Length: 91
Image (cartoon, rainbow, N blue to C red; front, side, top):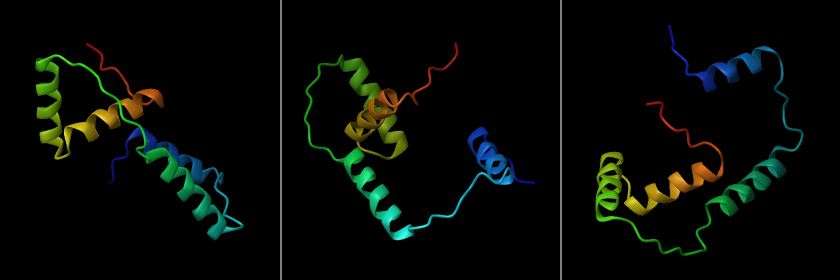
């Protein structure tokens, strides 16, 4: 039996409630959402920040574990934060 996370369960339940509709103009939708994606991930601004050596080394170590550049990891964390998707772990 397949185990779903909460987001996957929500999608399946939404589908089963017949909430999904086919696109009436798929080509137009693909282009429009493609433009949204390009605008979202366009890196057109540079930011300089000061970090403690300890924090930077921790970020670099985590990025190495994830197999991505540390600046990409930092950008991803900030993107999730401003989008309200960065969740603090309970202690």
